[in-house]
Length: 286
Image (cartoon, rainbow, N blue to C red; front, side, top):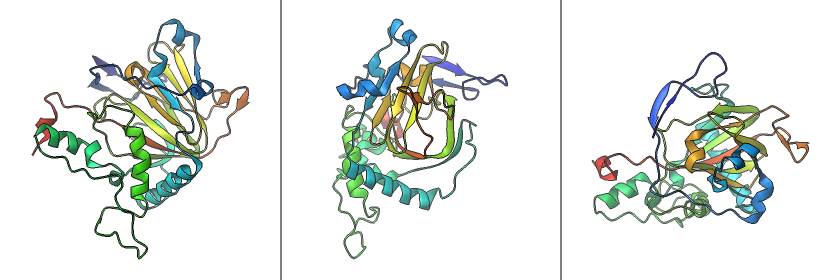
């Protein structure tokens, strides 16, 4: 499946002139949401009438607890302070405003990464790179693990619960921190399929937001999702590249159960799987 994305001066909802081969999983990804998710998802009549799979949008409210939320928020703040200290008014594709972002490779064990899939393809042992790596000792030293920050071991324990929702054959890109200012917004767009694979999702921290997903050819086919703190969401299968996604400042679009969701700063800890090379993981070996 190949899709041409284009942008015009007349308010196109798509990103920029690119052509990409859309990744296709061998089997549809099936994530089972808890029953509590029903009050966090709103399907349009068109979505239901045209038979789209509800499980293509996955929401798990309270995926993490209060203590884990506080830890992740604190760790994200520290990484942002060091790697992305100021908010940017515009993204290179002009679709995100008033934001800052960074990736954290230290939070991705090798066994979950592209390097792990390449090692397996070459018949090599995969470094177990355990998620329970020791955090820094009381004296501030890393105990020999020079890449491990003060709380990185604890963060990996939490994030591993996310990766465990998917087949072990998946390769993941490093977790990505996206900090959206109170006055920031994400305009409707479709991700470039050259940069990642079958699925994308995030753990929501700090403030709430409403994210809207619309079919690129029929905006009446849509899904709204309430992204509350501590919740986890994923977009997979057909929604991944056939729907735009956005977080708007428009108060009418931010309504949920008759009330406007207040604008607030939010952090999304993002997860994307890596695109499998056409000639397999072995082709990436040195």
